[in-house]
Length: 286
Image (tube, rainbow, N blue to C red; front, side):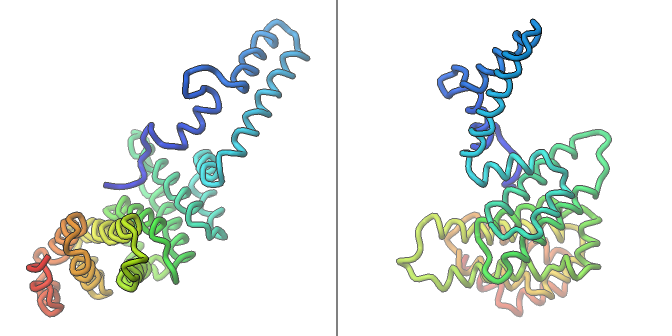
């Protein structure tokens, strides 16, 4: 359900692989130069060996230059520590670069969580900070492609207790920012004329609401305090508005209903609010 964990079919992996091996399976010029350099260096033919090695490295650098800004950012972020990524994106406004940063930290988190000596919370905190930096950069006019990545990231760490405490105790990591971004995205979709809407734009807008419902449901699972906070800050109203607008979109409805179940489970106050907002009528029509 989450966007971040990598697959071997990732375009970035393919681009890097193609620097060394062509799609037909033959070796490229950089690979040839490095392969030639090795026996030359082992036989103490230093000048020819180092010349061939430097030529290979030069060709690799030239190949990397044409992979594009987004791929270059992914390569750079993949070798950086999460804390350094957070520092670098503090002055970044490009949505593609910010998405690449979130993907990279998510990949690091996914890897570290599988290690026996994993120290919980450190990467989660860096991830949370990167998410909120990205949100603040696009708070007024959220980019939907970035927003889906942000909400996926929030869902990935939603059940971490330290992150939950952070959300309830620090104003800089408030619920208001992601909820406002979801609301703005929905209003923008409702404002668009039919001729402005393509299938891709509409699907991306729906994905924002779907990922937002996924995040809210995961966040409040087993936590009544957070369920109360989310509803108090308008989360339930946003979910109902998304279900109402995308009533024919199966995934938005499925995750919206799940989020409402999580918000209202054994929570009388939230159930009363659901009725007050006209939620029963909206749900019956979805």
